[in-house]
Length: 114
Length: 110
Image (cartoon, rainbow over all chains, first blue to last red; front, side):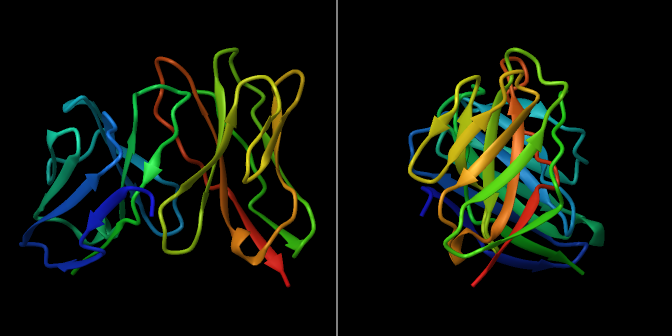
């Protein structure tokens, strides 16, 4: 148990559906991250939030829409996804955006787009 | 961004020490060296990090070369639960994001 909880663990959606991934951290951290892990590829950083403000968007398509209502919660809203978006989506948090800080990851949401 | 190079895979016998190498020849003076591991069906897990000096914690030891162009993660006595993909990553102020490579897949042989 890392203190970072992601729901759902598995999600299957069609290309016309709208769904949301949820991440909650119980660690009192101020920075939260979304990563994408496609099969046989390295983790890719998607978004970074620091004190609820988005500080990084790594050229992610607009069909992925993040939301950070407070420092404990992070959402990833999905709409009109493509089959190539099928991947493991990981949420992480850290106390601060500081290179000395550890990242704590959730177990991820395994997304399949049909 | 400075990059790291790791072997794709390694094997080790159970209950023996494991030395996982990482090359980072373009490391800057302010880059911290982090190690994470990812067990099957889980998110990555922090293992250890350091800047210049060797570091020890309950999970592992980190040996950093004097010129900092390479480092080695040492698992003192491997167990089957240590089978995972191990990532060596650099981060510094101004580029705090951790960029993961393909890592080393460690297999433990009973």
